[in-house]
Length: 316
Image 1: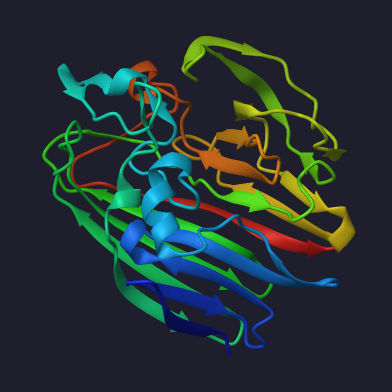
Image 2: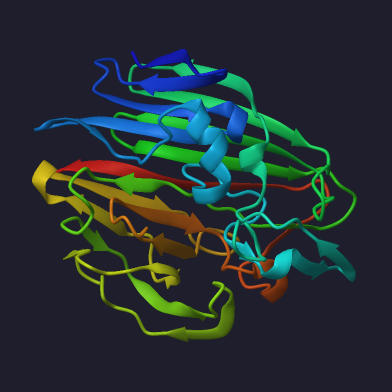
């Protein structure tokens, strides 16, 4: 039987979904938008922490606005140029949310508390559902919604996140979704191997805003060492087959994300300067979609949408 255990992360509650033998576990912090702060698995060399995480609550409070490790990116992933956009004939101005640049980035859910709605433990899986009712209090986003996130750890299907959002306002609501996990490795990421298949890489200006062009990209069409590759790019995907292999651990992460209209057709990949982690981020839209419209989801009043993505662990 899977287990869900409530622990403390400083003053914040943390929920751990664990396998029956506790060989695998994921940790969620509801107070920061349901941030996923840890994922540990057992390997041939011992316990492996798959995610770069916050070591304590002080680091979380200080750094969440800097590196955005682990949260869902709601109601927009990536950047909005200068925090400004127009929608349905109205102009909106969001607050700057990244130190050192004028753009707004990664939405605001990561700063909002979520409530535990349901916990379910079965022989082959455990699920934790969180909810939040947004009443339009953030400057520049007056659109109201009800949100539910369901985190699931399954014996064969692996880890997944189901996002349900309902527009509770009177008109159309602009929306985009993403997730921002950093996958780490103690020996650095150079020897890890990456594979994904893209129609192209979006060309951007110096502040990460697409300029309406894309270029062919096939460097990781086959499983290849990350090596010295430096990435902070958005790709338009051909399919939902994405792999990250840990050769020394005989372990591969197989990513999947629902694709099609209004789904996760984009992938952002980022390699921080310290080379200790790589962010692999499913996104429903490209950066600055609130202005370009590329991938932007327009949710009608009273309507709900569901989005799914996840990761399976393959033992080589």
